Length: 119
Image: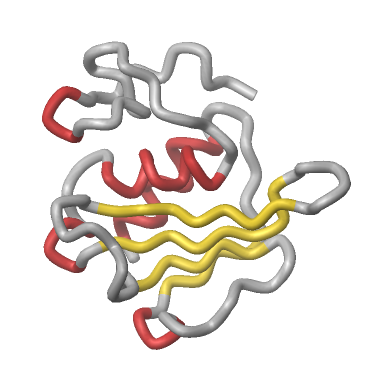
């Protein structure tokens, strides 16, 4: 939970707001409600070489993000930048291959560079 709170503060410093973030491994099978971000354990079809993954549900007409489900393996949940990176996806950001950027697709090459992400 500490890592989730820290990741939320990271994005709030950039001007983003969060209202419904749920952290619960037991909700693995549950679907998030509108406006909600669920952080849970991975489903069986997640690539085991990935640290985390984010599933985004969008509104059909507008394309806006409606709800999000973030999957994190427990052994990586406390690792720096993982939660910040996945919440970035929840906010609509894609991977950015600039070395040391928070949205870099490879954890080892990522960092806390947040250029271009301010709301």
